[in-house]
Amino acid sequence: MKRSWIALVLLLLVTLSAGFGLGIVYDRHHVRVRVLPAINLAHLTHRLQHQLELDSAQSAQVAVILARRQIAIDSLWGTLRPQVRGALDTTLIELIAVLRDDQKEKLRGFIAEMHPGVLHHLPNP
Image (cartoon, rainbow, N blue to C red; front, side):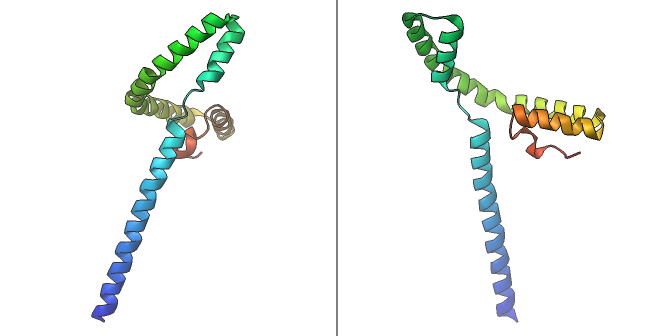
């Protein structure tokens, strides 16, 4: 009896440890995928070049400026992201609370289209 009890406790510990480890791996992957979609600087530079009709010298300068400033922006965003995310989540929760079910679905569709992954942790209607 004692041997089976020890085996059961070990199995429980292994199961809990595996679940904990998988949770950490999932969270790190999910956060990395959701939070770190870096701006495509080449696309942004091309778009600015097209919309502002930049000449080649201006395009080169814009590319250098964007690349240099992106490091500071990424660092700042990493610091501010939790507060911004919390404020946005609270706003969405308050909005969802005052909407009818059909409106909630429309809002969820709109947000899912504009910002995929934002709604995964908010309460369902």
